[in-house]
Length: 222
Length: 222
Image (tube, rainbow over all chains, first blue to last red; front, side):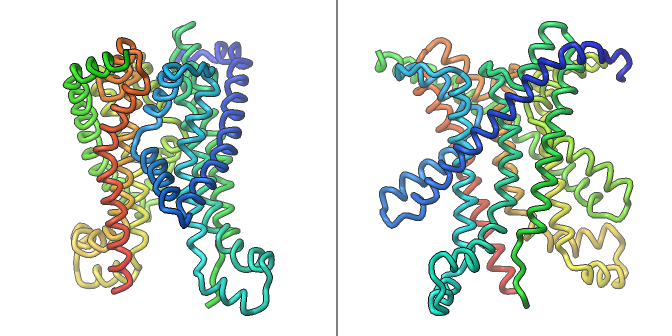
């Protein structure tokens, strides 16, 4: 099955793979950071008292969640130039990932915010805790347990989603595999190596997510 | 100019419907197959056979840890090297089935494990064989936990099916990509593509939410 698997080529292309891995990393981290901002903003909009703001946030979240990421990427990639905006592929891709993950993060954050019952906050106020004490001792310990594990799950999804940027010729890990395939015609070497690197990232993030789930889930003392 | 393109777009709208049909066929076939295999593997994964559990776990991790594009490239470019020649359409269905099975098997295993042990014991002491235990006692109860995420998984699968456009399956995304090369109005073309995806995913998302609420109230009543 794997006889004739050419490790020499992989080794020869290793610097190139490393560059792709680094770019995948950078793209994911930057997009995740921006998506957090977008998500928290959208969540604030979703919970806002003004109907129009709420409507806008719902339209954003639902339209992102019911269309494929690839279509969103193409929408920006082919659509921004028609608006007269010349945005390089890399930035287009990061904007797409930010908008996409932002919608999912908005829902995660909302689940966290609404997970703490109002009565507890009222109980905190009547116990004479100030705002920061309420945050520190009542809200955050419970909300973080609900938010952080799915956020790490979203980070895993984001890393995998960034592979789609290879289709608009952003040089990241998957693109390196495509290049190696077209230059040497060695798809197994190329894509198994790419898959291996993704698996490494996956296991690190997964371990972190499982650990956070164990550590952060606030257990009610019955 | 925009009006002219808009008219062109309306002229070729049947082409988009064909793409929508292709998306529905590809994702429909693979989600039926993924449900069947996912149910079987999920039951096996919830069993006590360590070897089986480990093997399925490795498969699930390999699928969840790598991007779907990479999986498609592996199936489409590497299988021919091993002497298995697949057209784009069967390759797409194979890839989507493998992907869907991995996720559905986790959902099913989780649902089965959520059924209390006592139910198993009661079923086996009533003299039911393994098939009867599953068919009449365990699976009907686990459906409560399985159904809402399962429908959610169908939405993800439909959205992921957009990626099979990269190997040349004429699905909705591919139609958009081809069209945008002739009608250079990216925003217009991909808004149309997005609306058509929305038309199939959004009802399913609503259904998933409805099921979740319904199941939650049923659980309280139990």
